[in-house]
Image (cartoon, rainbow over all chains, first blue to last red; front, side, top):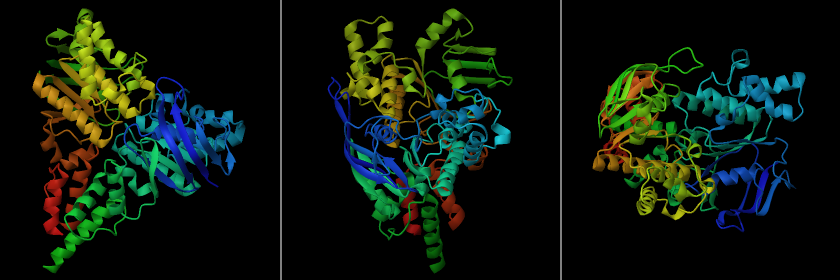
Length: 284
Length: 274
């Protein structure tokens, strides 16, 4: 069963001096197993939309439904929707990793063996070996590991949906690779649906099976990627910076040649280009 | 301008030094990129450079002023501004324009000059429409623009940008970097950009690659690009365009030069091959 947004609008300070509409009449459903990119220019309302979906902000107009039931109060999801904030490791407050990850499920009322099981599972999902990390101090791990501890803290609440706000920002290459792998695993193993906000989505492209495009608070496009070229064209129309791989396909298509069949996976794009170069060499 | 002589630094609660015996001279007007992965000591180096931290051993001087002497630190911080990654950590006011005015006010400037500096700074970062907004209503990228405007309004002689533009879009980030480079060229300001990404660094005079608290490599941006293996060994991410060239060269047996930085140039080379 999905999360459904029905005609959701939101303003900060609807009656105040700084009244500005952040979201305008947004409707869509997120289904199990989907990984949707939420893309849009700076200030388009991406973070606000995630916070409304997470139940942290109440829509000014419209409804958010989970499994057909309207959510009335902020935070009323009982952990079914997990949210990872920007720079989530800044909110780590426990001294050791076990307690940090156990904080959420403990508050859901889990104790003893059950609590231990969900914490261990969450650690496995983000590739942190319990025997190595359980007792470690939360200050004495790398920033990539901290980010994964934060993700594990959300997963330990056993959410069915995961909302991630810039999950790779500030991470170096290896740390980002580890996070990408764990997002892939979480989706594959537990069928958890995700919405991922990323202003530089290059490395996440292979994960996305849906794109939600936000501009000035409006959902101007909602599509499943058919090909690299068509995705590039839609993103460009929406004034979103193209990932380099899609930009390349767009350039090559403009220069002539048939590129419409290639998927949005950057490595696949480069393989296809290389294959065509090899073919042409072979003809000579 | 900023001179480090065998500088080492260890945090109070840690055993191993974060910065190990670094000697480096950043010339006035120089544009330097400091590159390194998470935990390599980049931010510690930045804090040493504006006297927010003082070396355990060795000396750091800014225009001849040693950061060891407490009375010098305030002057050093006025000359060298440090901008961090978290704009929320630096906001002091409920209004964008007041926030930007805070620095110039503390310089004791006349009100008309302060007004001028605030307006100019907001224009430079393309945020003039948000002068009377509270910062908390802005997006991550917009907040980073405002934080940058706050630094520009101080007109410092040296600017250290510590991963402070990471929430901006690709285009927004390169606009802001172009702006900083332009200011550095026109006003001979020293610019130190701290980053873990090898994109957008072609304007730099030098690149210092930091690994485990030591400078592993001091070179030019283009020279760096020709050392692909070293970049990968150090766990740094190649620019996407370089990764494209590398994959195609490997898979198709081509010899496209690795130091191409413009997509248009790459497309011109690729088209006849396809």
